[in-house]
Every structure is written in structure tokens, then in C-alpha cells.
Image (cartoon, helix red, strand yellow):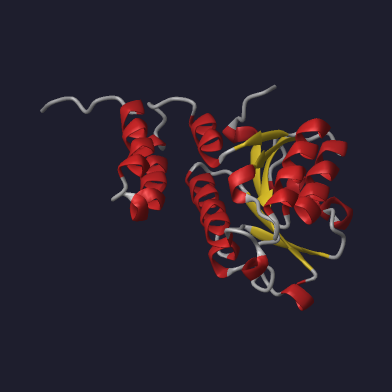
Length: 209
């Protein structure tokens, strides 16, 4: 199966922690994309799970992420699977054979957790533009390694529109509002308006009264 299916999916947000994020390259964009994914997942009734690495030392996940998560797993292993993640995923979504993963650092905890999920037999999609490291080269290396290991590397819009599948989906316009709201600060730049215009074109025309 090479398509993400909403009913079979769980969104996993790895270690967007308050004391870590200031060191992450392009952290604001990474967090914003993680939040966007979580908001859309919740609209579609897809469970959102967070993890926190040694929260006593690194703090909790930033508030924007933490409040979106149904549950947050505290861990000490870099691979959250070693701290009970697989069972937690089973508990929140018994049909959840697919896991969409994003987080930090991309080349450490996110990478090791995604590899652990692959070993556990999960289908794994990694959201590149919602995942960060201190150095861009480490993030790029993580994506390359995960692709070689069997994960599929995607962007947030690839995830959202595959979850929806059809512009007639009852939640299509709700998700589209989230996408457009996230893009709003860049709306003054002509190039930045193109994705929103394209998304509008995906929706069926509203019948005239």
C-alpha cells in the first residue's frame, strides 16, 4: 500500500520540545507545519500522539504541539518504540497500521523512532517539512536514510490531500481552511498565493442559487 488512508492512520509528533526547538534550523516553520498537520488530523478524527525525550531535561513539547495531542509519551530511549509506543498506537487506533511521523531532531529521535516503527511492521510516512535538525545536512541525511529503510518521504500537503482523497469529502473545506490560514502571512507575495489558488481549484464549484 503506497497511499495514506485516514482511517488507518495515526499522526505521531516527535519531541518538539521547548528547550530543543530554539536550536533547530527553521524551527518556526517546522513547528507551524506540525501544528497544521495535527489540526487537520483532528478534523478528520485521526489520532494525534506526541512524544517527549527526557522532559525533565528538555522540557515539555511547545504548547502549540502539546495541546493538539491526545496523548504524550515521555521517553528516555531515542527510539520511542522502546518505551511502549507500539502498544500505545495500538490502544488509540486498533486499525492504525499506518503512521505519519514528523519531529525533531530528524536524524536522532525521529529517525530512530521511525526505524523502530518499520521494524514493528508499520507503514511509515515521514513529513520532511515538519521535521528538523540543528543542521540542515543532518535533516537531509535522515530523510535519505529513512527512504532507503522503507519509509516514504512526504510533505504536509501530500499527507492532507491523500487523507481526504476526494474534493467531495465532507471535511474537505474544513481542512482547506487550515491550509489557507497557515499560508495567509505570505499572501502578499505572488508566488506564495499559487498553492492556495490551486487548492481552491480542487474544490467543486458552488452551484449558483
